[in-house]
Image 1: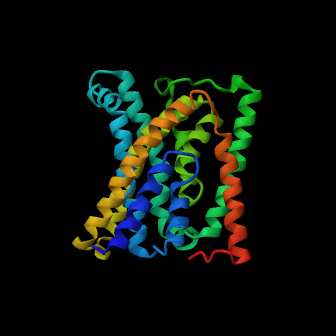
Image 2: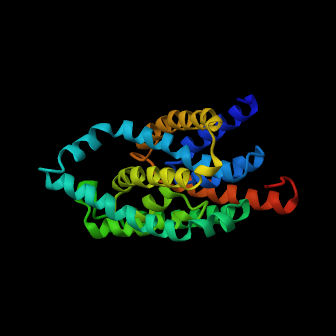
Length: 276
């Protein structure tokens, strides 16, 4: 395997893992990083989706006890069945809309300027939700994933559907959407993690199967490097995020999104960076 290709796969995996579970858009960062690295094309788009499985395994490992309790309790525990049903309900809107519109979205929105615009708009939404909850703490009515209703799950699922737009952020849409609809920051973050399991695994399986004609056995090493580096960086990021949200809000991520978005737009129109 070419050393340069391996290095690019390693960098992209690190970017994926560090950004997948933060409200800053992993897809958006991968598009921008791929453009800077001259790492683009149809096969790379499959790679960018496939390595999400590596990041997802990090969450599965971090929540292995909780996941085992839910799976083991499906036959006997109403709480476990409710959590599982809520995950299915939350997963459905994005899955259905993704199947319908994924080709159009990939063709027209997987580009730096649309991503930058989504960064900025998403940042403004985060600022608004955090300000609203800070001034009206009574809006928070669900403090645990265990207390969520099917309607709560559906609302978060509809919010997740906006993440089909690159740069929006799946984590940002689900966490901030959950907070908008009355979930606490901790409950929204935990449900976002649970919801990521079928969403990211489903996207990976669907993308790899659909584009299987593009793939060869020789692609396995650099795909594996990307997935492995995504697992390690995501594991570290999830551990950090769980500590961070216990004492902080998401305002800093909102300003990061806004500033970064304007930098991308300015660099594109100013000719400082030639974005692919």
